[in-house]
Length: 450
Image 1 (tube, rainbow, N blue to C red):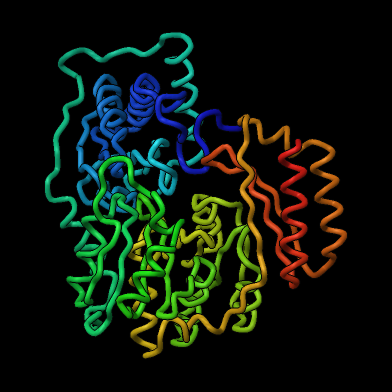
Image 2 (image 1 turned 30 degrees about the vertical axis):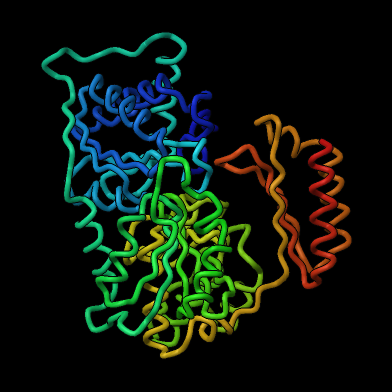
């Protein structure tokens, strides 16, 4: 069965428009609480990023969970992976994150984690959706009796606990002393976390975009907009820069030359570091969007590589199916399951810094073993959310066939709808830069017309 409300990363949309409304959030909290309570859930942990709408949605979720008889623990602004970790640490039965990750401030979203730090499976989400549908369309939401209502508490030391967890993923014999690092927190959930992690491990830290005001999250900053980080790295003559997105589940680097190091290159760096020490077990999981250059570089080291559907939940599923530990996406979602149960930008960055320290080379040098093929990604924003019908039109399908014929065995084409925004993503990759750009623009124009 297809999911009606949950995308690849929970429920997401524009604030004030269905489904990101107080009424929906309350009923979602009630439906989730009812389903989870039937499995023994007594308390959920709720974290959020720095969007002003988070207060509204948090209150609505509180009411819904309480009506279902489930207690709530609030931890305030906190990275998504921190909620996944802290849900287990505080012995909560589930975690909730109110965030739209890398999206602008006027979007928001809600996603769930189990008490083991993993996202809810499809069966659980479908069960929640079925009950939510009844609450929305049949006024089926019911409140438990007064003596059974859930209670709400606030946790004050969550940030410190998560900082210590992150620091613990870097071996004790290593220190960041001597490194000058620029950290871009995207005015997001890690603004009070990330700079402190690197400082407490010994680095000289220049912190930028760390003053959230409720509406500046991801605004020309962070992992999706690297200009300010590149400039700061060059101005401060830093060794490297680290950019997180709004909820800090993804990370992108900038080397000392100001060049971007994306998620595919991060996967290569981590795999190469493990391989050089004889510690590489299994292979690497990428996605349909992963650059072919990553696959070819791993092949030279005889490291297996498989592609999952786009979305870190599917990367995790493939990792569990293979028993492997390392996977991720070019966008900077990096899964290192020996350290964290979900994508964690800070933890992933520390593993890259570990590779830098142990190799005694610069970030620029250790990424040089991978050559990226020209890849063009064009996001076509839709006036309607019905991406499937647009992808199914004969004009779009014929455009893809034509482009694939031109590229031959020297490239590939991928069209997919976004799971978090009303977008169709057009990706073309080939050995020829001009041909790649031309065919991507051609297909994107046909999609816009459709």
